[in-house]
Length: 157
Image 1: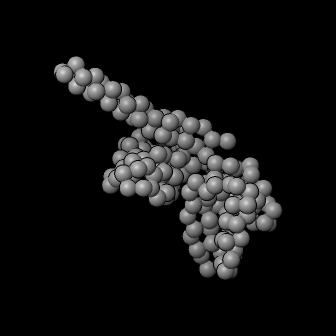
Image 2: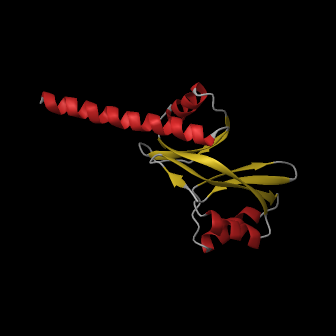
Image 3: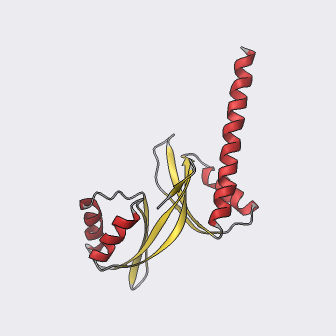
């Protein structure tokens, strides 16, 4: 289950252990597709013995069943999904806010986004509740500042 605060959401990330053999990733992706489970974000890292696929779907219960049906070993963790503008410095702004609040980012990866559009940063952090609060307060303050700026401009016309 995920919670949503506008641009910040928490969700389940699966770390799925895949044998380093041709077709294993294709088999998993095919099974997710056949169950109509969309991949929100993923990254695949290899080691000599196996690959570790970090995967967020937004459909934890259904994805968990796919992994069980394919007899794949996996672990689960909570991650933050932070919607970001697709521009230089967007991720820097987020991780600097977290650092200033003494929150460690254990790992992070981002989805690709359309130029000028949005992207999603996936962050596994030391204190998810505190990180959510820090990032949500900043987003709310920014929206309030934009409303005040627009009102100020409108009153000058």
